[in-house]
Image (tube, rainbow, N blue to C red):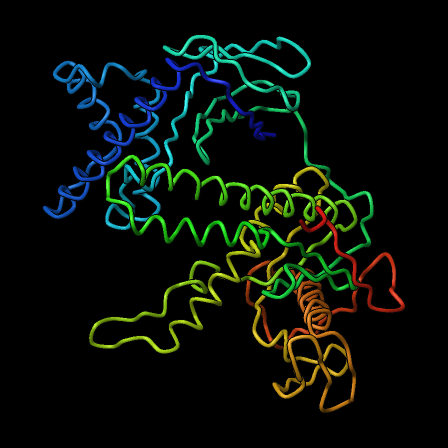
Length: 415
């Protein structure tokens, strides 16, 4: 199956200038192609990849600066634009801003990519017009290269190889009679139905203070100045470390959960809609904007969507099925008597059923409800987010029955 391998590049001064130029050219091609598509749509016409690629070849004869970048990466930029416009529409695709967009471009032809290992910690790759580029050999490739993508993150350039590792998804999980439900929250990142709490701190207090001071310093700099670029680079380094910690945490949790369970049940959460701004419009201003902004930051900080992606990726290697269920009333339903009452949720952590008196941690109770809904969906063969309310949930299938709720923090220890 296809998987990614990412390494940090060690560019020379000339190569660093070249990749910056390649990124600027790809950004110009993207924005020009997007503007052309929008103009065609306004006139009732349609523009796709083939005519734009032909016009790109003509433009390279008129504009010499387009010839500085390899043709394949420019064509790939137009392919990515075509895919984005087909999926979202030309007027919903974003422009690539010089200040906010991180340069990224792809070499799609594996015949033009050669990789050699120089030592225990170093390797090099030969790319069109860049020549041999050294990178840190942090892990083996483990497969045949299909493409290579160069991207800049937090001031550093990386290369990502898309490789075919020849792995095949198992037809059956090694522990087929195991299942778990996961409740994602803003207090604890993920709580499983067997009583495990997965959480960690992604940003330290010192980094919060430095980032706040850099934000204040940014407001005092002039737009377009070198000092403003330096401040942005320092801010990006902090956010880059936070993003790496979050990605590593989600990958570790996904690997542990999929190795132990044949079925993983999640709530079908629309994270993009849930984190939308509450500002409203000029005629209808939003309410409780500050509270909604804080909730949005908490949701994004816990990495709900990233965890879902990590679970789907890890499930390919273990044969785990990832099921998503309707999230309605999972936190207000008693797992024992199935009574739905908002008053049963006494606090963020305490659930006390008003009907049968059952008490449990609120997140664990919600995770058990999610698991029960997932088993019902699996039993009736409906893997959608919604299911028939007449379908009675099947009893939980699990490899072990915990005697008490256990709180274990997994992943990297907090800083």
